[in-house]
Length: 229
Image (cartoon, rainbow, N blue to C red; front, side, top):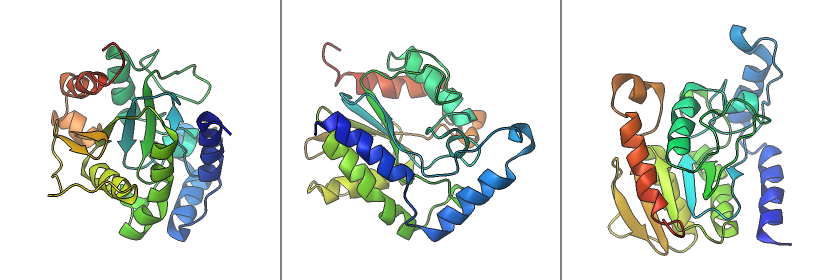
């Protein structure tokens, strides 16, 4: 089986996961009760797999799906304000064919990038426990193994930064001393280049902690790993 087929198989495995009882209960409760603005929609209500280009040289890692974003649509960073901000930047910097990500059938295609997360289920208060993080990290480890051209990882926020470092350690690549997270922080861990970015949460984007030019700068820097960039 080739890496792309194995990646698709992994995505199916992720979507069927029930390892964490608290997360299973929460994601399914959210899918049942919904919110008023999406009351007429069928929620995904399961773990959300990674998606993107199997030949990606850049892997983007977030925290976890949003309760009424990825947990509703079945695709990470899709159908919420963080995704609106993120994919507008990915379109401006040449990774996405369109600036919006609203639902799985919206025609979005990524080139040179694969989008993943540290935790695959929407967590209560957007705060996974360390045990839930550790239960989910093997999926990220396997994605990195199945993306043969991946050389750059962009971590959105400190939680994702920590998760990526843990995943790389599981692959035998440990950074010493352990690099601290920061926006535009760049470090090398084994064969990977790791870049940090503030997360495109509403808290960060509404306050101006993360602006469109700031996020674009991260992806322009990441693009240097692409052939011909």
